[in-house]
Length: 425
Image 1: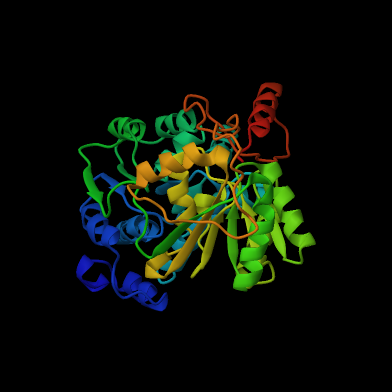
Image 2: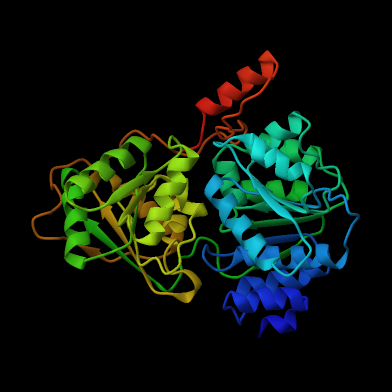
């Protein structure tokens, strides 16, 4: 099958060709036709399989086929959980609409709101947003969702993990009841299916691959190692392998900073990316990693969904996630678009339970190795450490640090400070 058989406009086909794509991925083949027909869609696919184009292309086709008045109200809203993912989706929207009379914008916290508000005021057809900044601007009267025709909830499971349920409900309450709804995610838990039942109307359900499976192109391996020897082993693997681009995951922000400094002292260029970093610092770190000036990017799970790095060869779990599904999303940063990738996990005794849960989730026994000089401690306890970053209460919405300026009443300011303290990791 080629993109020409899906019913997309010539302008979109031209943009697709310019990006070098010729054949739609399985999720695109299954999702695009029912979206073009106007159905609500519930879609599940592995990360890195083209979900973004799966909803972006038919969304742009529908809007361009039904142009509106010169004043441009927001006609499509794409809601994402993180700033990085919002920026990535926006880049896709902008690229695919290159030959269409479609305006788009992205808004998220951590940066000055004024340029975002100015762009929206000029008229925007497609808005990509994170929940916190969207609701902040809406409360100030700077964003109206009264004319939304298509609503996309991207990475819905991550939304709930991060505590955005109430924000999602608030966003839905200020949109028209009559609209097309699309829900895309890598995995679907019972909670997600319950949420979908409340949003989608007679949805077409599509699934490109079984839930919680990992891409075949990713080679997975576990290194059993003593907890205190992990940094040394990581340095050896990177140096001996002469790896030039490595994404490393830790469980905590402090751990990411600490590991990044250790790598720098070992002569390996590194940067950390997490929720306590300013948006400017996060953008700079990611740009350096993509350009090659930064060899290792150390990240918390905020990066597991929003990073799109072409041909990323190596992902390393310096610490296993205590939420098993996050393992799927972490390693899904490599092996994208059919490319080969390698995912290694450095597992100490106290992570044994996490490893067992992950293998149960993905239905795969991951091969184990032990590196000489970095052997595991036979006397170490296999009891997990106290969890520091597990699933959050989905009933407590958590917004990004919006870093706004301007006059607000005291209650709005207090609410914003509370949300900022709970900024994502």
